[in-house]
Image 1 (tube, rainbow, N blue to C red):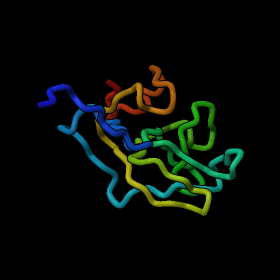
Image 2 (cartoon, one colour):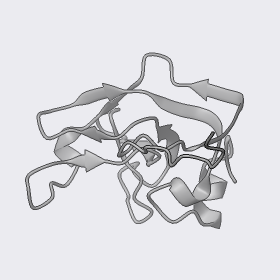
Image 3 (tube, rainbow, N blue to C red):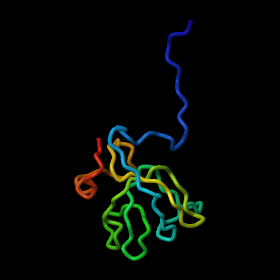
Image 4 (cartoon, rainbow, N blue to C red):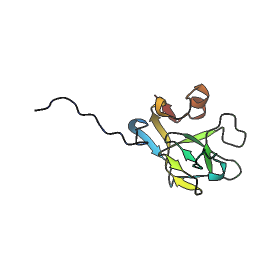
Length: 125
C-alpha cells in the first residue's frame, strides 16, 4: 500500500486565482476585449493572462488590460479576467469577476496600493 502523496498534474493557465468562493460576483454576459488595443508579442499573439485587471475604454466601451499610466480609461480597472485569452483574431467576449477575493501572487501585474484603491470590490489576499 502506497501512502505517500502523488504529484498532481497542473495544466498551463489552469491555476486558481480565487482565494475564496464565498463572495464572488461574475460579470453578467461577460466583457468584450478590444483586440486592436492589445499589443502583439513576437509571434503575433495577443495573449492576456488569467487574473489580469481589465479596464473599460472611454471611447469604445470595450475592455483592455490595466495600464496605470493610461489616460483613455485603461487606468481604471473594474474587472479581473477569468481565463487566459488570445485576441489575435479579433475581439473576444470573456468572463470576469467584479467582486472576489483573489490570490495577489497569481495576478499578472504588481498589486500595489494604487491598484487596491482602484478595485475596492476585489480583495487581494
